[in-house]
Length: 173
Image (cartoon, rainbow, N blue to C red; front, top):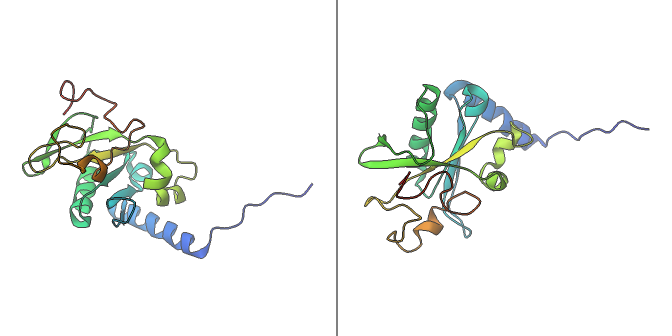
């Protein structure tokens, strides 16, 4: 019986994996930004925070690239410093005047929203949270008074598409 071998990664993936590792070593994580397309809003996510600090990787959907990058860097920096990001808990100290919260990401969304992370975590064995940001008026995507289309623009990456780690308006926003 012959040995089974796994073909090597293509050169492009080898270079991307090396860049992810370098960014994680240098900055604590790499940020991958994906532009808006016909299928949905832009999104950005971290790669390497779990490997480097034991901090859950994070994704934010629907924010402009600059805002998403700043938000993700602040999240990793604070989380590695010991701040806990508990689903349903509001955090008022990252964006002035706009709170954020987090929700655990359903693993079924990992391939689509954390694709590059699989270069570091082959089987997807890493925790991930979604950072959720309300409108400037304080409306969350799941609330009935949210602007039309907001729930589609800032898709909630839970299995149900609704908050699952808290009860909206009771134990969370």
